[in-house]
View (cartoon, rainbow, N blue to C red):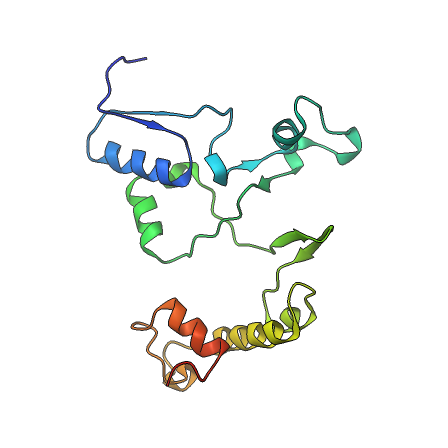
Length: 181
């Protein structure tokens, strides 16, 4: 191992990986280290053995749970939109060599001692126990707007120019129509 570096980056969370990648692409000699025996910092995904070790000490998970490699538990769920500045930075820095992109089949949360599917369409929003009636109606309206949106058909835009409004403004409009003119 070399003894001289231009930069030492501690931690392997997403921010640290992007920083390390940008610095190395710019020609700096970077030492990138993590104190954990896994990568990802607070955004890591752990297999069952790693999860058990983190939260239960050195105990091994019970055999009836099956193979450790069948599990991939996100400590902090993360989604990266498919077409954004972050994706361009990740591609530029070659960090994508260490990331796996996958279409999401479903997302789940643990709430009140039960596992619940996070709604991903208008019908799931109405059936979800995670929201009250008003939130269900707002989520349903949002899903319908997104589902019916067609970039080349201004009739589906509800008068919004999505190249100019912020996400906050869009959500305010879709959730509560009287917020924006």
